[in-house]
Length: 425
Image 1 (tube, rainbow, N blue to C red):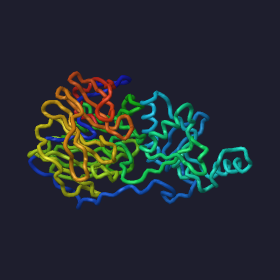
Image 2 (image 1 turned 180 degrees about the horizontal axis):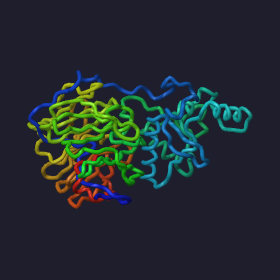
Image 3 (image 1 turned 30 degrees about the horizontal axis):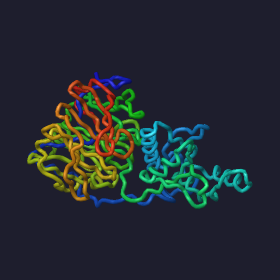
């Protein structure tokens, strides 16, 4: 049985974005034409039909507690972004980017306003107008040189220092990201902004291994009967920020299993004719927050099937010559919100093909020596918005290769015993 460096595990791998090889029959879509790609509107001000400071915490994402015991909440996209930024800060400095405050309800806003008016507190917005009330602002503790680090890096995560009336508050930052953005790492089962690991054991059980900060925790059983599936992949099909599971069964049907909070709901058929595909992957190619499906056919053509609401739109060819690749993955390597394609070629080189808007640009070699790995997976394990690589070697050990800008940082072993797993997602 496979093990993390904390608990026991299973074996082999075929992942959150793995796909590619061959097929004779092009799958048919179960429903309609492709959806027009959309963008996310600016993340500022009113949202969700709520009033400022009157947003139920059930509609927000919990970040934990501050040093003084305050419960911290933000809107989901802001929470994911700040978690990624905190991870990047820790990776670069070894320190902690601590938050003192996030969402403020109306009563708390009045409390701070009254303190400010009496000359006993810091600058405070008039109650009902603060971005804290929209769950789109934070106050950092800011010891040492954190402010300088934020000035150089926060904009890349969608955060802006609130100059103007709060110019004297270097700790106060607001979430202002606009434009197209995929709101979560594609294999994020827990919804915390970090890719988790799902694995199909050789007995057909589907297990979930939480990512608890670049290591893996003990597993939970979330399904049975997966041993007969040709492919299994994890991706956010529904667009709710949590990974769902898609699989091709023995009959060649493409099934979607919705994430229901604690496990998986009953499947919906979203396609047919996938039995001849050697591998299938799901990733957000369009950048609309919903996973699409990609696959390589028998001729070596790489096909993109757009998410169309309830099923798949007509396929679009985005590449050819993929039949000789050992493994193919789709994941957002560049961090622009659109899945790119990565592949291990016959020589064992790991190639990155950037998404260029309409197809793929020329490849860049980002690694060597992957020919001996039984499985290679691309997923945002670090939570920084860029895909990393997880790989199972010939001994069944699971390795994490962190994205380092143009390639990889030093690898870290995070599990063992994966040599005989049917899938790892």
